[in-house]
Length: 350
Image 1 (cartoon, helix red, strand yellow):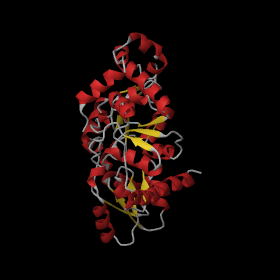
Image 2: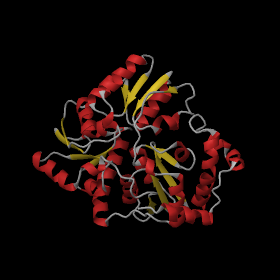
Image 3: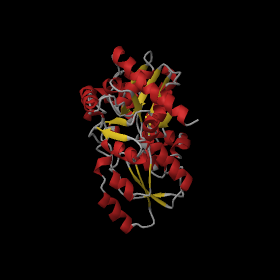
Image 4: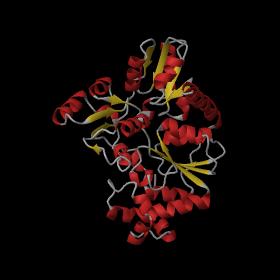
């Protein structure tokens, strides 16, 4: 667990992190990417951290991989690569730098380490966990295999290395249906997200998709009644859901897609008003790039993703603490499942 007193005292000894109007103005090109959601007075506070992190990255030959659920000051201010779980996994295989700073939750850092065993992978807060990841263990995979002998296990990347190692192939929300459809077996086990599995089952009706009963605390909170009530009051709003939402929520929306799919849809369609039924930072991060779209409506925040902050990123790079390690035997087995996903995804999109 991070000691905030020690962290802040250490950073104060090495960096001038006093809010600076001058520095914020010097970084106006960065602020321009988020000014709809980050007012200039707030950016004045962030600017010293952004400048220090970007300088330290260059000095230490580090790269920052950031998930779409990171806050705008991270997403636009210091990230070198942004994307959903599949995009980050693919990009992790291309990293040339010596150090990877994973701005996301712990399983994402494990995935980067699995794909880059010789590199140092840092996570700014080791307690950035995931309710979905924590809902399944390798023993749970064994239970499903015993219940459905011969069925391949397709495991969401939102899982630990141990669970990936016990699986046949991984998937993300953007490629799950493609992967299930491509497998030769009729019955397919999907873990751990029951709602993603149920939505995939409807998309691939020729398969018998069975699932583990896990869920994401962000997406499981949305209900069909919430969507219908919002639509009744806002009939001119396009409502877009992530497939980790329950199927009746997806049915009540106009479109469903992965985080990258949502971004692509809004970018191409440019609805006048849009409600994103997913994590709050999604709309914030694409808001300035789409000034013609008014993002509206409620959203749910992931408490784990929000554990990652500029302050913690700077401290992780400065101290080189919170390095992620994965048992080599587990990592090798998990790597097979992840690489199968990446290879199959590339084949299916050609």
